[in-house]
Length: 129
Image (tube, rainbow, N blue to C red):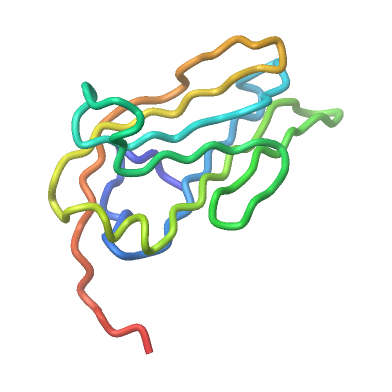
């Protein structure tokens, strides 16, 4: 899946949307927690975020999960944040939102691995039945 800041045409207001990041061979530490935060302004408090997801290695429907990879050819993690249709419906089409993705290692170190701006688009088809 494309980065939020490089292909925003895929994020449609009112649609389910999975944000997947492949960190295989990117991080050499075990990830305990990861966050995806989308805000109207980067200066807003986290409590005022339009969408904030916190994921762990335990999968939760509607939230996502961290999958650790450790085999002979690669090591790292895959992050999956599940945005629901109800959550993306709270966003305004063509408005710019700031976002970032942070990870926390099992050693307690927090790193921002991605940040940028996303501009969701309007649905063309509104029928769902």
